[in-house]
Length: 194
Image 1: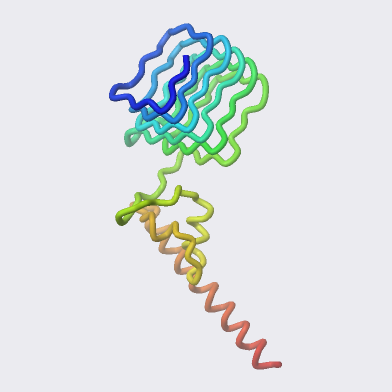
Image 2: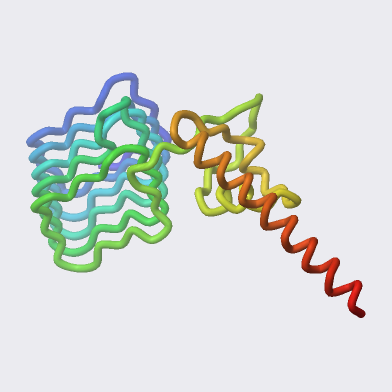
C-alpha cells in the first residue's frame, strides 16, 4: 500500500495489521499507530509531517524501515517515536529525521545498519517568529548564527528560543560578542606593530 501527499484528520490505526509493503510519502498525519503490525517487505514513512507520536512498538518489518526526512512534533511531554521491541530484519534508516520528542528503541532488534545521519532527536527547536517563510531549522547553523554577531545565517531571525533555551541563546550571543571584540583587539595590536 502506497500513500503519497495525503493529509489525515485522524490518527491512522494500523495496529496488528498485516501488510506486504507500506509507504507513506509526503503525508501530513496527527500521529500514526502501527503497534504490533507486520510488514513483509519495506515500511517507509518518508518526507512526512507528523504532529503527534509515531507508535511503532513491537512492529515487525521484513526488510527495511525508513523514517527519512520526516518531521515529528508530538504533544508536550509525549515521545516522538516509540519503537520499543521493533524487529527489523535488515536496516533502519532515519537520515534527516527531525524528532522533537524522545525516540525510544528499547529492546529493538535491527540486523543491519541503524542510520541516523543528520537527524535531530529529542530537542525542541525554537518557535518560528515573524511572518515566515521560514528556513528549515538547523541546530548547528542556528548556534553559529547566535555565536557569530557580524554574520547573518537567517536562523536567528527566523527562530526565537523560549524557556531555558533563552538563557543558552543569551550566553552564546554574549560569548560571540566577546570573541569578536577579542579578535578585533588582537588584530588592532598586530596592525599597530607593523
